[in-house]
Image (cartoon, rainbow over all chains, first blue to last red):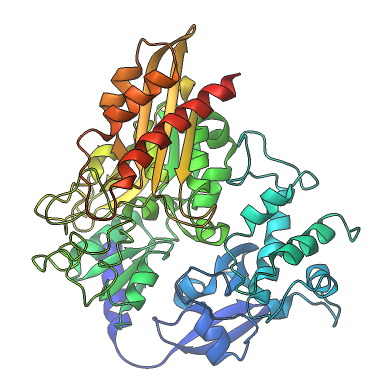
Length: 190
Length: 329
């Protein structure tokens, strides 16, 4: 019985006509005209006016479109919106609370962790997730012994660089990006 | 991108029958290969059958080994305590691939089924027997610095890019599948991918509509003594030029048993059994590792730009073994 029901769904999906897509973004449900081909990135930017998330390569090679899905960093350019309708998405627009910058945003400003700024939203989203991951004490490619990952406080600069390697910066603002993350990691102390 | 219909699968039998019974239907998991290749018209499915909601997202420890669900994300796999402590080379291999963002999306099954990054495969205007059977291979006489030296044919020299699969190969991992007729089968990972031979378009032994449901890594107590080394053009977020997964079992100061796998140099996840045999019963030494490395790359065929991979592959094997032995202290 199960497959027959599913095959009917395929048939239904093939029929033309407008479908409504739903995405939960920064705590708010948004609807839009759904094309199965649309990526989350294109829906954010072209349908919902949330242009903070940037399109760099559009092929999963630069990290400019990094957002959080259920708290985990993912690439919006490789995510089909139709498959993310159950997820809780967070974009750069969702970080600030009551006009107060998120500590990572504030640290990027304070450390001058950017030049052109195009990769910055992706860098910040990635850095926020990086610290959450480190609190879970998980290893990276830079961890000498994967059975014994570093704590948040033990994260070396090599660890930070490896864990940020999915975000490219053509201006090469990397040293100050690492400095900003270090500062947030240690609770504002430089 | 070509228009397609989307089906959110809710049961394993439902999705296998949907893909098996619908022309040009494909399974859709993490999307990190598929969406990329659909954007450039290399893959043009008419229907995507989403497997992300299936109950295949667990890692469990059972008597017959570690069960890695097909939709477990690569990051979860690499971060899982049982993987990190029992099969460190598997954790290291996964962490050596892509970026955290991509590993948070990519799945166990999808990593196995990922397509080659051969630039001619990715260019619909190039000749590629893998993408368009019978059209030729622009890589063989083209820019082929990144291409394979092992397992190649006159029809295709594309590399299988997975790091994870190289580690799974040395641990004798089993791929469990479900077919549209409801039957399951267990396929050794090393037998899942096909050599290109004269039919590079046939990448695996899987039937149409056959779904990977989980990967089973059998118990191997000495897998704690294992290591994955990846050599590439930049330190992170790059595919391998050469990689090696190695594991050693010692009896006193003699190597009783060895496992060696190669990545970045072969057309499929590569198990170097001849090299393993060279190590068995011997005391570790630089000279011995060099003999094993020669055996690992024996039969390698260089093309115009990729001859360096033969020496690099050997050195990668030697260094992986050397680093592993050094860890033992």
